[in-house]
Length: 428
Image (tube, rainbow, N blue to C red; front, side, top):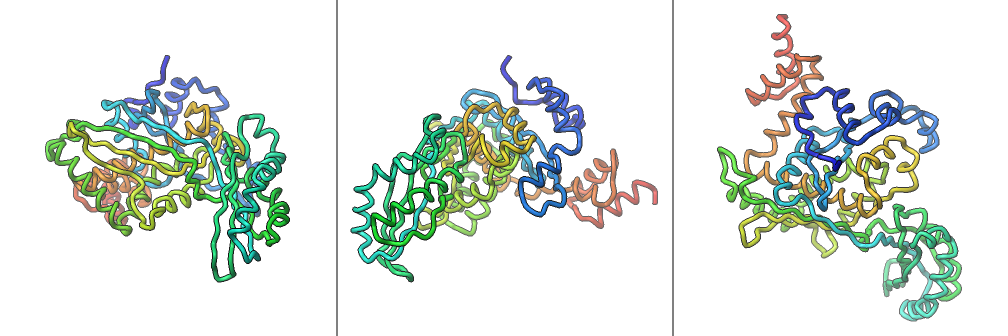
């Protein structure tokens, strides 16, 4: 039976009831549910092997976003994040996307770049041509370092040569290895290949190889998503749907032309993407670096998304950005919850994971733009933030909801106000 990602009344359940519900939907076994319900999902000995100087573990909330439909398949999206409103906003925007067919996605091949920096050459263009004549030898040498990757259908596919006639340290040539890394993120693979071909590069050009390292601007490894929204899905007592669509497009346009706005706009996109990257044990810092570099690729920092109207007056949102995610290697393989996240997602390839990630980013972006174009960003955000403030004041159980309701009703979400309300509630 196909998965239904809509999870009706899910927010009204307790955490234990949510786990039971998800376990039933996804047929999770007892070991899987124990990872979610019992402390110590990441054993200390595994944590100690992952990084240096380990003292303990730091936990963040682990949630699932609902309502997502990607290429016709319902998906539950695990998100690890501390900020209120992200899960709720992404889930609600995914719900609004369903009448229009959900999210349609695509992606390019999982190609990563390794850069080999060559200095000490007086004739950079001559060095470039010399390296191009050695293309086949360079590819063969690079591929000799990873027979398994070739067996899986990957490997070093091509080289590019970038020349810099002048720099503060003299002329420079940079050789790029273009590597199909399949279902890996690929950092270790391309770095190893770069190390392997460095002596041949020096012998061919007479220059000195310095850096041999991947680039996190994965501009050949792109993921894309699109969604369409009829005006009716935005209708409310306060706003007409067409009015909301116009406001969203105006808000997007602001981000497209102004880097100060674009920085916050794109941060909102990453509010959706980073939690999924973390939940699957991938490198969220690499994804962030690639995203922002890509947003500035035309010499102007702008929006990673586009929002426009079609002939029927429907809102059409698109996103395209680098998405270097893996299913194998690193924390993705060693962290038990990362493995569980992949089982929850039901993905069969790194490209499929990347496509879901950008769909979540597009949904999260729409949530922010819709709020900005209507009641403002603070109303919904502060309503959820109020829970943290209530708990900080010491509220427990039913007290939390009562304190939150009072603060939100009076639009006064402050720690001292929460303390006063709690004292009043307890008759103190």
